[in-house]
Image (tube, rainbow, N blue to C red; front, side, top):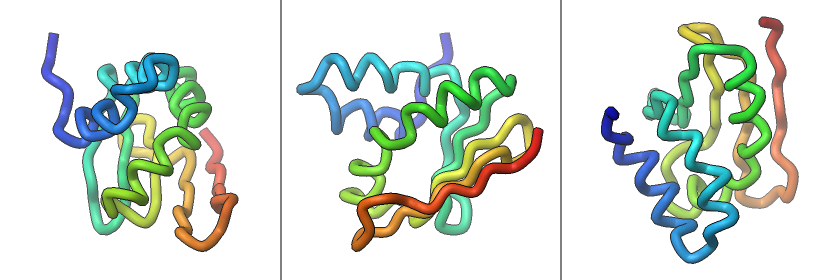
Length: 101
């Protein structure tokens, strides 16, 4: 089993006191998580996994903003961006841009 990235571990540590939310984020262990030009990127292999990741993006927003890791979250299938979420500190809801698969 491959070791999760430091970014994945940071998200898991943020929710270590809340087992229910931590369990939802455990699927990040099957993804490649990295930062690139101000974006928090999550690369998956299948569109089904991309959808599961998109469902837990709201959980990831708080730690990404609190730790100032990125201004945007991108979900990629292979090298193709399938969703992009803007993280705004002032705004309650984030802007979501869906891309066609």
